[in-house]
Image 1 (cartoon, rainbow, N blue to C red):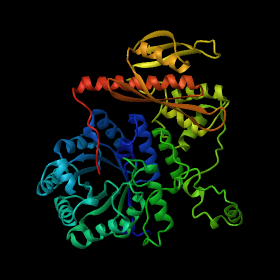
Image 2 (spheres, rainbow, N blue to C red):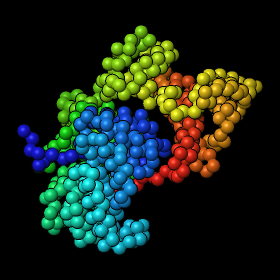
Image 3 (cartoon, rainbow, N blue to C red):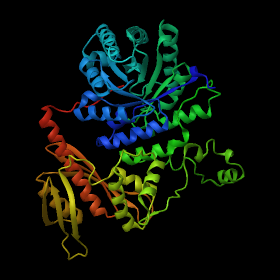
Image 4 (tube, rainbow, N blue to C red):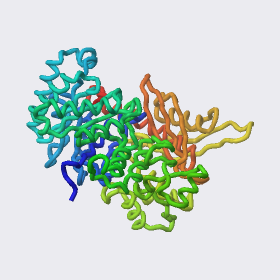
Length: 524
């Protein structure tokens, strides 16, 4: 039986710190599906969001918390009572949940950001940890920018947090400043100098600004830390957070060297989780990315190929199968029934009841008629790029036709749009077919959306791959983002602009209801 004292908890913050790095926020449905995948992956804690930031985020954290089967749901809060109240409001119906409260502790943050003395920061820590303990016995406290905090101050506030009732104390290298020997020394010093440190679990949250996030995290584990805060694919603010897949597989492969540490993560689910996060977040995994990149198990050197043909272990310290990579062997066509689609969705990690099978199947058939054969990545894309994804959508594409081609042909488009309960049609021209479509949509929605950025990429491979279009549009100086996917790139472009228009519409609804502005989440 594994030694429990050597168990390292995996705290996943893809939905909080990871989402902060994205061009556009994830929808509640996307967050929920990612949370369930992370739950199946075997992470111990899922930081579902920052509930005080918006009513939508509070509802999303609530929904995630009630859907999880294994992982503990966690909400982030500043050392402010109303923040802590918001986490409690989102998760109060659960038998167990975590409140994660944080405050900056480095001199530059305390002086220039908080405009307080360190004594006042210590008082904030003490008060808010005790306040959070009134709601739950699972309270985590983070010393933001611990990597640049004077060690005497760090020891003092860690001792205070534990005395106040924190069961986990997190030591973040918030700006990715430290080197492994330096960061390991900080953790070692805390264990040597904080008298009550045995009463809490020590956690680390490392950013990758100098490319040290994984090394710093593993060094901290060697010095006694027993929780690592991570993001799938290394997503996160600026250069990203510590990669889940890297620390998990490093500890699995080098467990003996690291003193027998282990995690609950199911390694064979890593590839699927990585692909889902990349698809949903529209953040492709770099080909050279450790563990999950397309080149991670590729060999082009003749010497390497010769060695691998003789014995894979000559140049592969891990096998593709160990993290869940496999050849696509799904054969889905228009002749496939609902039961097969339901079974394939289950293989991909989607639980029954979390999606509308009739809706997915109807869209699957339309795609299968166009493509002939549908693959797993196509099916997964249908889960996240539905034209009917959100009941609050004000604008929905009903019909589209385009005329283009030849130097003497003026590109023209006709667009029929459902606007609320009404249907409207507009025709127009443009510099090209996409411009013509965009001109029509702008007139139909009544919005003055200025296109700032337009990207197109293929989802899948081959000539029949679906095209994904992502747009960044500006209205009154504010950016809105949208995505669309289709085998027809003109249709994908229309769907992307309509998605952005719906984002603007929902933002206006929220602002009208709440009379305030969304608070941008920050954290360790």
